[in-house]
Length: 161
Image 1: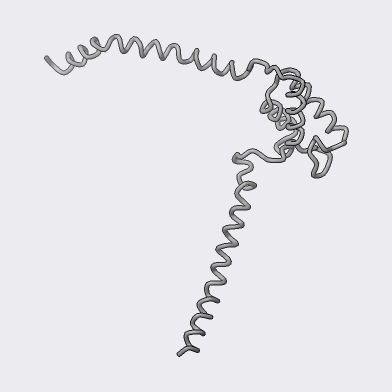
Image 2: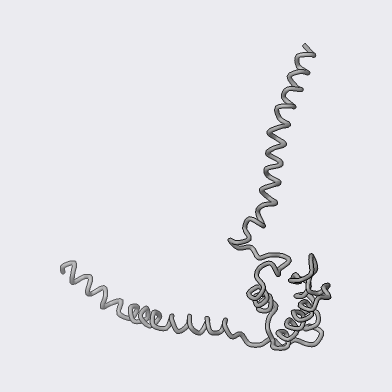
């Protein structure tokens, strides 16, 4: 039996496996489409009045007022803050999730509306800068204090001799 004949017999014996693999490859795109469409149009969430109030206030505390300086939507008395709070409660009435509401606000007003910006490539410096500054301060202290300590220690060694 030559090599070509063995290869063909292996394919024939694995015919069932190949058919299953082909069926999977055909069905996979439809599963992806169903998953994506389910994510695009999630079922509305039914909130109780108490849940709406608590979640609405929580979202309003997490978002910055576009007009007031250093105030969140919850604390701000500006007209735009009132409108945005109304938008939050309207979206909660429609069954939108907290993430969907915040995403809507960020899309409309930009990342600056968040009090706590998300961690992504655009805000990487914002998140890492404090850590970098602390590490630089520690390195600077070690760099400048170490020679001073060595000099003091060598002076003490000289005076003890």
